[in-house]
Image (cartoon, rainbow over all chains, first blue to last red):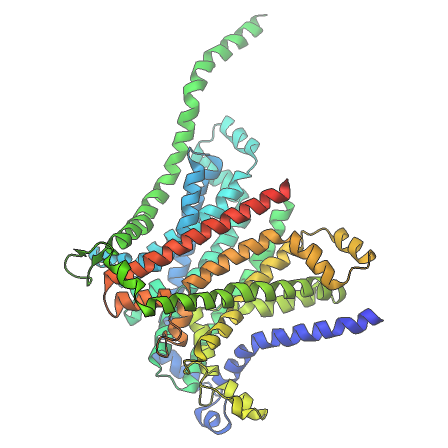
Length: 274
Length: 319
């Protein structure tokens, strides 16, 4: 009885705190569907009187949002796949091959992962101009493949270090070479971890800001993050447009969030069974 | 008899092969590292060395750099903008590492202990999801949302204050040099809190429930159980979270770019934004490289210290 009385205040306090976390999303959603007239009359806190979608449509057309989404999906998707492949190759040599000096190699990857992008951004900008890759999506894909693979190598190496060696030795005795062992045995068995890495890499690359901001200057190549950040920086948007921008920026994130929750719980569950 | 001899002979026959073959097997694994090694050399090592080299020169980005030795670094020591940006970094460490870790601990323990046990894990999962949501949001989008909420005219926060009769509390949250840094800090707490919460909740799952039951039987209240069981048990997670969040705080760029552009009057400038403007707006590449090199040295030194602490605490636990 006393505990029941004591429990509810904690629940209520946590619900209020959680509400505070999601309130910005709600305000954005509410204001994105208000007409400018309604907004200037009633301010940001009133509920919308109807569904006004012209603001969203205007914004979509003005910034060519479809193109930005395509760029973001192309860049993040390529980076996720390529970085996962690079991580698997590195981790195979370090975790299963146990090459000489692997501790140092691993330490190098950890430090590379910690390195601030500010220490790379100007040379990368300069070099990409020299080789003619400046302002191309390919340049961003190459750079982030390597940056994300630093984390992937670190994580996968420790996972593959625990890999049951009997399985590998059995396959070797059956005549499988190292490539076959990697693709037929190591990769399938590590699929849950690789899946989690793919999701992480995709979301992280989607959210990256500094390097894409520097490398992608033309409108046709910009990602969602860069396009929205630049628009915000110019301070040219009115309230309706700002909210349309925010809502269209939030929606993909919510989709990722749902995917992320599923993959993460599944990855952890499979890992526990193993 | 013949069988044994044959076996023995074969064993002897393969033995000299096995010796030299071993290192060859190990080396051929190194081939798998080749693409990674090339890619990391081109994208990380070479640019990093170039940046460090350029920091000892004066260079506008075109022409050839002029070697000036430590001149950039000497200049930085007298640059009040540089010191201010690092002072603001400390505020960011408070907002992105210290506060989220403390709040995350309390929230994780409350969600796990109270909500999870008395209301079911579904409640805990939904509430956790609410706290984690800002973490998946691109920082540019979070910046748009918050700069509109914190806008001086017609901003939601000021409207809300007016609506509840606290009109005198209205502020130009991001435009007032005395307040802007704290506003940015508030936004960063909002952005960051989900990460420690999720890590700590995962960590709590491996704590033995019997410890709590025993403590409860001994009459320990919630606070004492938190202090004497929860905290020591998830110490490894606390180190990891503090390491990652501190480094993230030192690197913070996007939030400052979209919320305040370092202003007003440099009130929210941070090292990474300072180096960005020095590189691309002032085109003092050598000076910008010096700023980013100092930032790198601080981050790497901090990473090593924190990693050492983490390893030591893990060893202490297993001993």
